[in-house]
Length: 230
Image (cartoon, rainbow, N blue to C red; front, side, top):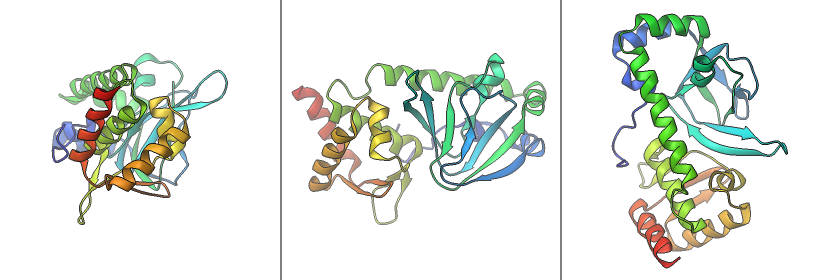
């Protein structure tokens, strides 16, 4: 998806009347950085729509280690899977920084889906996009080369959740090097090495939980070369 193209989300795909109906059925909540929007294993008693900020979606394995499987941003729906299946939540969603969301109780959201003409359609579209993203992650994203996979992931975040900066470049969600590694099944050291090389080339700029892609086209070409050389 081009960086300047609006990313389709559950919220933006609803018509104005449906958005107003959904707002009336919920309440606005604020979350601090590190605060959970929902936890893996919890009873799914509400859904949320992120209005401002980013959150990471993690799954804890049997050994207790968490893996980042997705990043959600403004307009994204959180917690829809549990509502559909009735099963406990399958992932934990955590605010990456100060975040605002619309929280809608399960029964009110179910009523909304029955009454809003485009409710079920947009929910189905959201689920389909999530499945496609999951399939993309399982197939390796940027190919077998870990640096290429990292570049592909960063570029996908720029397309899906990026914020263009006035001075140039695209700010992406503030994931740590360890979290980035879990996204592509790589070590923190591998991520740190790739980012260090890209900083030297002027492709990215990094800081404490801050990553800016300075030249998306050049990073994309670099990632392609890494795959071709593997």
